[in-house]
Image (cartoon, rainbow, N blue to C red; front, side, top):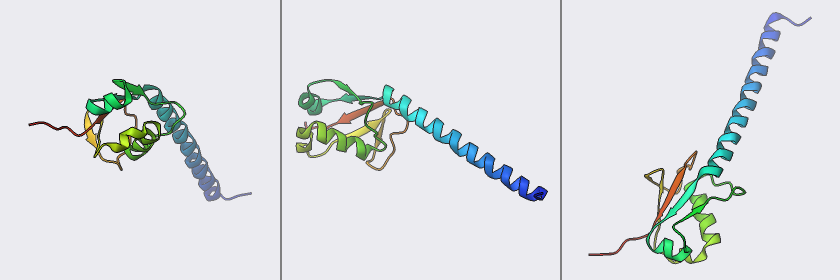
Length: 116
């Protein structure tokens, strides 16, 4: 018969495993929900290149970070590569390429602005 400490350790390991499973389910659900709700707003020349004021994020693409989003956009709309730079705002805040999209509901592409 196993000692009580062995049982306690096994119970703790089981609880840890159960928690990991629940967290994975929660993360999957949040990512699924995010994909359904995220909208990419376009401004300036980006709007002209794509021909729309916004585009939805497709359900079958997993976009984790801003860099993933840019890569997907450059594949779908190669003309965007011709822009000198493009800024990205996630839920009304500028974001760098390494930043996660998380549960973002709105992403904006902001092309370079010229003027005087």
